[in-house]
Structures are given as C-alpha cells and as structure tokens.
Amino acid sequence: MLFLVLLPIPGCRKGEKDLKFVLAEQYGLAYAPLQIVKEKAYLEDLLPGVKIRWVQLGNTAAIREGMLSGSVDAGFMGIPPFLIGRDRGMDWKIVTGLSITPLGLVVNKDRLKTLADFTHQDRIALPQPGSIQHILLAKACETQLGDPRALDNNLVTLNHPDGMTALLSGAGISAHFTALPYLDQELKQEGAYLLLTGEEAMGEVFSFIVGVAPATLKEKHPGHLKAMAEAVRLGIAFINNNPGEAAELLAPLYGLSVEETERYIMYPGQRYTTDVLGVGEFLEFMIRSGYITDKELFEDDLFW
Image 1 (cartoon, helix red, strand yellow):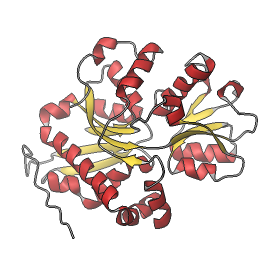
Image 2: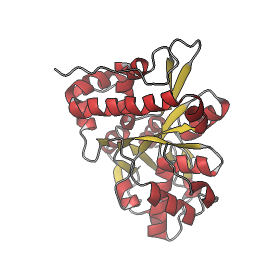
Image 3: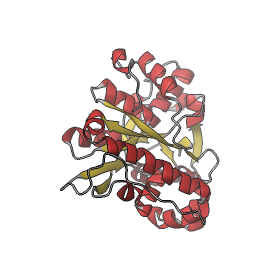
Image 4: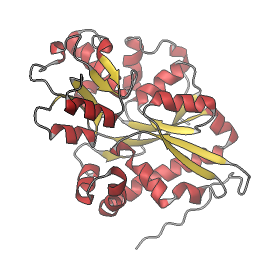
C-alpha cells in the first residue's frame, strides 16, 4: 500500500491566530476532487495552523461577491465566468484545472428539435447569465441561428438541483443546461432528451471547472495558493488511482449508491485533471460576441 506524506507548504505561518482559508465550490460531480480534499484533510495537512472552511454557493456571482467582501479567499468555477469577472475588474487568475465533464441541454418538449424551435415562452434554466452553460448556448446560437444572443432573454437562473426539479416537474421550464449527475438523471426520465452537448457547442474538449484566486491571496498568503494547487492534485490523483475507494467516500456526500457514484466518476467524457483547456477559444468568442468588452485586461498571463 502506498502512503502519502504531506509536507507543510513553505511560507505557511504555523499557529498564527485566526488565520483562515475559505474556499467556495458549487454543485455536481465535477467538484468531486474537492470532496476528497475535504475527506482526506489534505489542506489541513499542507497548512497546519490554518482554519480551513468550505462554502457551497449557487453560482460564480456569489463566489465573486464573497471575494469582494473578503468572506471567500478562493473558488472554483467555469472559465467564462472567470473571464467575465476579470472583464469587470476582478484581479484574479487561474490556479489549477479541476475537471472536464459532459454538459448537455436537456429539453422536455417534443416540438423542440433544434435551437430554432425555441419561442420566447420557452425558459432555459442554467446557473446564471455568463455561466459556462450560457456561453456554450450562445456559441451554439451563433453557429445555428447567426446570433449568439438569440436566446439570452429565455434564461432563468437556477442552481443545478433546482433546475432539474423545475424541468422534470414541468414548472415553466422547457430546457436545462446541466452537468453530471443531473444530466444523467434527467435523461432517464420519460419525455426528456438531449438537444445539445457542451462539446458540440464548443467544437472541442474544454475544462468545465477551474480553481481561481485573487491577487490579494497571492500577495498575502502565497502558501495558501500553493497548497490549493497541491491539494487539488492529490484529490484528483486519489480518484483516478482509486475509483472504487473514491466512490465509497463520495457516495453518501452526493446521496448516491457506491455503484452509481463509481459509474459517474468513470462516465464517458468525465475526466479529472489539473490541465486547463479552452481558455483561448472561450476568450476569442466572448470578445467577438461582446460578452467581454475590455480586451486589454487579458493581455497579461491569466494563470498564477
């Protein structure tokens, strides 16, 4: 059996009173390595004396607001909302990749065969305007309809669990752009089907979730930044090397059976990796379509 010995990150101020590190995550199996990080206490081992706290927030806007208020130190999100935040003045950069995952636009009406079939009455649930789901939808609208903003007025902001509930109950929602496990669970329901995948919209493989931190964390606590990257690497390695054991740890956290959980973390197209893919493609599209306005803010390196 292989044992990992975690050495404290250099620069950590061990024992400093009230030293905290607050990290924000969102919903879904794309964040599974973070659950391993928590269960295995990797950050606590890497940052002795630092109080680690995790918060689960519904979208990137809430994470951004948390950073601005000082209640959140780092967070995990899609690439498009990271780019939009930087466009709006957030001095933050990418620390690490986390996951590549299947995304899909699930619909519940037989008449919806293409994006052109949506009317102004067809509401589309996704985490928020500017989310990765929104930008993928806009990219598909540009390709299929000639207008990236063709369905912007159809959007409804719901987190993934609420979006699934709304879609399956027929409560005013015609489509839900979501990720695992909600994507798989929705497609098992009668009358629900997949209209568009994320990879079809993007035209290539891309990172779904990345870890982001502001310049203040880099300046004040560089050890936290290094520990965050190392903890994510360890969490990813644990899942990839021990999928069965990882599933046993993750299953109760997601309310799934061990078998379901292992199937999801090994799902076709699901990959946990620190690699970051798709930043350039997202950036080029978002500048072209007007979702980003200040190109000069992206001339510097976007990675810590």
